[in-house]
Amino acid sequence: MNRRDNLKLLFTGSLGAGILMTGCDPVDKSVQSQVFTGGTPGGRTEEENLRDQKLMEGTFFTDEERKKLDTLVDIIIPADAESPAATELKVTDFIDFMMRDQPNSQTPMRGGLMWLDFEADEKFGKTFNELSKDQVLAIVDEVAWPDKAKPEYIGGVRWFNMLRNLTCSGYFSTEAGWKYMGYKGNQPNVWDGVPQNVLDKHGLSNPEKYLSLFLKPEDRGTVAVWDDEGNLIG
View 1 (cartoon, one colour):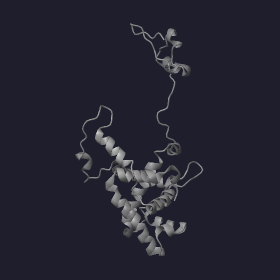
View 2 (cartoon, rainbow, N blue to C red):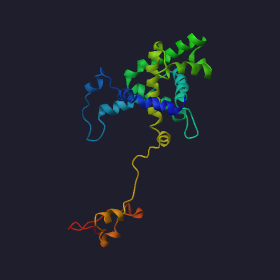
View 3 (cartoon, rainbow, N blue to C red):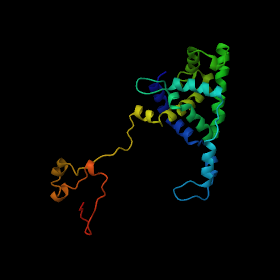
View 4 (cartoon, helix red, strand yellow):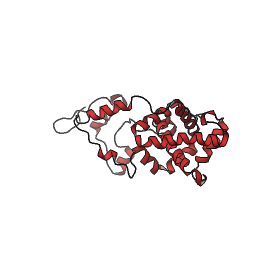
């Protein structure tokens, strides 16, 4: 597996990712029933602050589960020449947080991690964390490719899709992830007035008195000043 193959699978299943990351499935009414009171406009309510504090306390996964996840997230997004592996960006910590933030994901996630041991025992007579790299990949290959998976692995496929979505969400919410995707976001720029070719096309021109006042890089922190008649004076 490589990260580009995983990204392709992620984006072809973007609807499922959206449902997962909002925590809202067709039968989940918990979000609609929450009512927060108090607080200030644009701030956090007391209930929200208490919830945030609770989310940041403790962990969800056991050490054994975290070891499984570290193995899998680095298979989903390994290191390459352009960016680091998922574990280097603490993706497992992100998934742990998401389990606390979206409790409805806890049972399917933990069920999938338990299934790994069942499958490892069936195939190799070991627990998942005792497997060699090739043995781990043999199990992953059973569920990583939805179009190729056997019918009896449909549950494992759904679980691995959830894990892949969470892994990519955690990875690509980091600076390294943004850079790998080539995401630029909002970038500061400089405006030097309407380009001359556009002005020429419409038979217009920039007034000479404003040419020296157009925003320059060295002046971008200066606030414009206007006179009482709406003329730009500095």
